[in-house]
Amino acid sequence: MEQNRIMKIKYDSKGLVPAIIQDAVTKTVLMLGYMNEAAYQKTIETKQVTFFSRSKQRLWTKGEESGNVLHLVSIANDCDKDTLLVQVNPTGPTCHKGTDNCWGEDNKATYGFFSTLEEIIAERVANSDTKTSYVASLFAKGINKVAQKVGEEAVETVIEAMNNNDDLFLYESADLLFHYLMLLQAKGFTLKDIEAELKTRHK
Image (tube, rainbow, N blue to C red; front, side):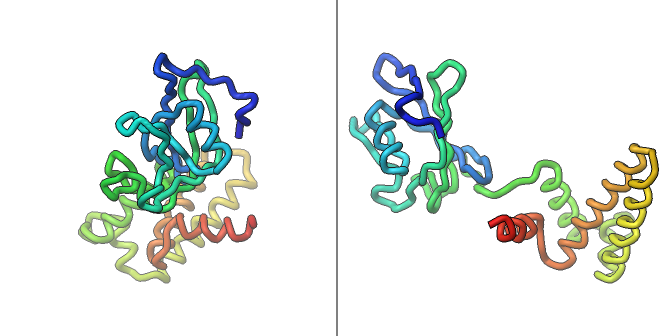
């Protein structure tokens, strides 16, 4: 985190700077607020995000009434020095309407296209015909068949890793990951559970 004594901030004519609040873990944008120099300094000192309320014309620490505070992780300035990116660990929902962020979105970890694949797998298992959907048909055969398929794809990936055809290695690797996502769901887990397990090992 940049320290207040070395960060140069360009405040506007009213002495304010916009502060984009982002969850440090999920990277979800939670809200937009404004800081003046006093709010910035208090945020640095207390490690809880404080804004300047334009409606109340005073400093306002997020969660001072609701308890849904924003614990400071880091602050960075943009290239023009006139916008702050504040990464936080939120306690509870951020929006005053009770939602996770001010756009009504859930604040959950996403894993890019892998998260999309998880949703596709779940939808096809729930709603697709086993005669037309590979995913549905494999799930219908039971977890042993799903696990067996993961094993087959793992062997094929290992074989291609020892050869010199990178295209085939990537193809088999994609097959392995896709079927592994299926196996996770068959066992009632998601990538979030794997992330949590890895985090415990990292500690």
